[in-house]
Amino acid sequence: MAGAAEDAGDLQKAYEMWTKYVELRPHEAKGEYRLGRIENRLGKYNDASNHLRIAHDLKPGNVVYIKELARALMNAGKRAELMSLLSATVNEGPVGSGQLRLAHYAAMAGMMDEAREALISAIQATGDTSPTAHLAMADFAREIGDTDSEILSLRHALWFDPADQALLSRIRALGIIPGPSIALDPR
Image (cartoon, rainbow, N blue to C red):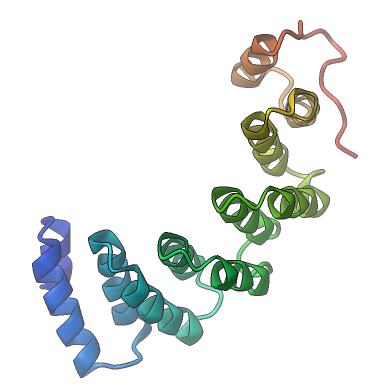
């Protein structure tokens, strides 16, 4: 019933029902998570962070729980707790994903040095097997106005698919004419 109310967009009813569910089944990860998620949507960020922390403590390694908790902490303005969570969970999830999560939220919190360091760690962890961290670094570099780093990161990402039209278009938009040597081996 609570899930149906949530799916129907009746957040208040879903909130009331998930609250009752958690009261009847305290410390059940799914209920804590669903209540926390609704509280996030209702703007009850402090309450959400409490329930989501319980969900994560009960089911460590659940990246969905980590992301929702990070969103609650970010919206509640709890930067120190957010960075502590993200640092502590950097190895939870697929290789490199924790560093990307940390970089994303650090940048959102205006902590650009921490974001850059996390991106460098993600590149070190997965940069020779996937373009994902290179693309994240390119996006970060664009955000901070570092055109040289953006171009370099895009060239590394292009190594994985030299015919990627979106990447080639983005490189052209930066004033570079792609040629046969545009892609750079990230190793």
